[in-house]
Image 1 (cartoon, rainbow, N blue to C red):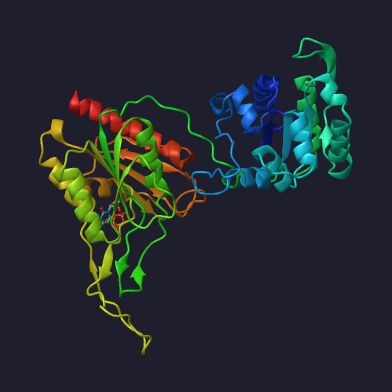
Image 2 (cartoon, rainbow, N blue to C red; image 1 turned 45 degrees about the vertical axis):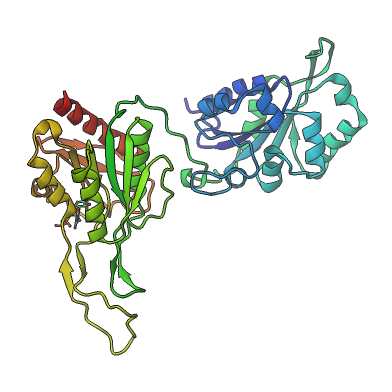
Length: 429
Ligand code: CTP
């Protein structure tokens, strides 16, 4: 049975009330209905229940700060405001009702509600006298009548003060039902790429004590001081491999060509724009220094201008560029690694971006002396440059062929690292 919130993104705003602990269960119920949930905490909510709990259960970074940025530098709460199908504030405190009624965006929950055009729901929880105070009544009226927010009214029962009265957070299934009703009939607002990213589940530290070198991005070959020959690589696949290796405990060096995505701060980064610079950096990291694996995810130029002009070329009459082949970095490292004893040899992984058939891939694996080759058809939808997903085949020097389904680049990275770990365990005993 599919959940009533399948495919939806729900923003869950939590304020500082004793009832904040119930928001953990509310998060679980929303997820059980199929929703992807991002949690926003006010500073005092975080003193009742920490972001770790909400982060682990939602698999999203928790928004606690209006100045917080996502890993790709987007402003976290604005992404939630723009992508959420609904925002539910539960528990909503008397302070929050006052802040919201007056548009005071000093905490991330209020700021997100101000910035969204999605339906907003709120479920108050507070002491009975606070609830019946004229200020609270006026604020609630303003939220409902002027802003169109839906309230899930508090109930009567025993309160945190020990007294009986009105002010208890509504029963959680009622809150879930209200969210379902609020989004019913409206299309899903945003797909995965417009949402805050999911945090990958943690992995065994099976690369602890290992050094993994990853090349990422595209190389650029100068035509003159202004122009270059480049390619469409964004570095996403290489960065996903570096992040996955870091999460598995490896020390990681990224040899980065031109990349469009942020590089993980925990990696050592060597910039290498041209093929010649990338060759020098890769040989240094893998051959001159001990490395356990090289993953050549970079899209390396096959040709470069035979001579780059020293000054900017003018338009003139048009021009003919003479190109010469570049050094094959992977083939060189592959050959040098194979000259070593198996026990001391790094695992060498190549990539083969093809258009159409992958039939040349086994030959490429042999030619380049790689242990593994990750082949994909970049012309296939969802695969290749600039996407978050990839469908690949992992070929092994042992003749194995592992056809993976369409996966996120991070999942592809982990499947590839599983193979790298297995080979390292074989070699290093
Ligand atoms: N590669 C490399 N140095 C180069 C070109 C490619 O190290 N000068 C690496 C890439 O990083 C990739 C693998 O070799 O891991 C395969 O790249 P690809 O461009 O598919 O191979 P080519 O050698 O260009 O083969 P072809 O032109 O026949 O497709």
